[in-house]
Image 1: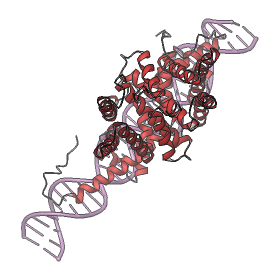
Image 2 (image 1 turned 90 degrees about the vertical axis):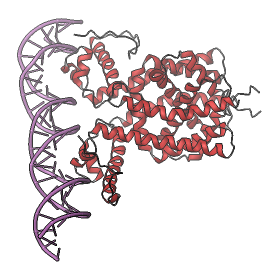
Image 3 (image 1 turned 180 degrees about the vertical axis):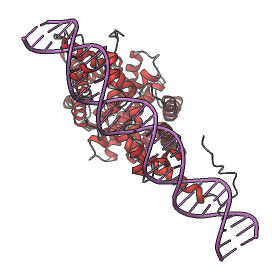
Image 4 (image 1 turned 120 degrees about the vertical axis):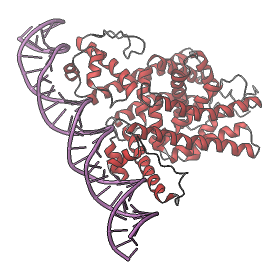
Length: 217
Length: 217
DNA sequence: TCCCTTGTACTGACTGGTCAGTGCAAAAAG
DNA sequence: CTTTTTGCACTGACCAGTCAGTACAAGGGA
């Protein structure tokens, strides 16, 4: 098994060795995320990942128990980034006293921001999320939950404050909104890269606020 | 062996196939679509596909030049089914003089119907659509175009008839709508299978028509 | 000062297994 | 007789994971 480094217990000048390892792990994450997004998990080889990270193959196995574990840690790491950034966007609006609808709008923007910053991570996530029978199935469920919950909470608050009709179906609406942002953003990146983030945001915002069906007032 | 019963989720419409060869090809499509949806393209073996289809391995290669070609033809065949069914839904509404908004609503329902009938095909499609650097990249672009165009056309007509604000961004709105339906449906199937199609449809319809933000005017 | 030990991080050749695709003779099917 | 399918042995490339060994920094003893 893995000899765990006792990072807190040691008195030693903390990071001279620890940072080296972390840097390696980060390089591996980075290499893995792009390769897997491009080619898929199964057709990406550990050799490729190692090469792209500028590291020997053995190093991958020194740092991760297996290819699967590397991937799972990648997923967990990534979703934490997303959930945090969505939550931050919602909180920021709440702090300055904005409505919950404004918070949703801010989350759409945060989502778009995230996707344009980490496109590979997003691709990889979409490609795996609805698969069945895969080893990391349970990890994915947790991961999805983490993100969807943030959206659901804001929807719930909005209903409580009567900003949204209480007839909406919270779980379904949350996943629809999530999907709307996800797919629009991926399509934007892949097929309409000339558009600006503002344009995409405006289009989605309009959809959220029911201003698609014209007739202002 | 396993006389694979053609249950729900089959690819083929009840199209009366003529030749013996077509029947074999259909069996292979059917076997391939479920296996690839579950496991991904690269980790599905040709031996598995042949076995599930109840056919010798040599037969696969007698009917398709390679595993890649089999998959590409599968994608093309599948998207044709989807585009046709979306178009039919839109036309049906037009024929009986409904509004273009009603047509969009009907397409949402047709989309949901399709996804619940062919879940495996949908999963597989989502998993591959935004990948880069894959052999069938160009096939996918055509395939996406075929489906999105149907939606865009209805949006364009709706704008022309002033049912929709002329400020909407047609391509972006089309892909957002597409994604909304896609993700909501997949999430429904995978994580909330207890919901009825009507519930899902109602939630999406509400979102489309801007009835989320309460206040019935 | 120099030598020796210890622990951590990394290396890359190697192994055992998997899988796409081939070749072919013979049997069904039409 | 032609087309299609079968069954099965075989090949060669490819790949996850292993393992014996290297590099090097830090500490201790003399």
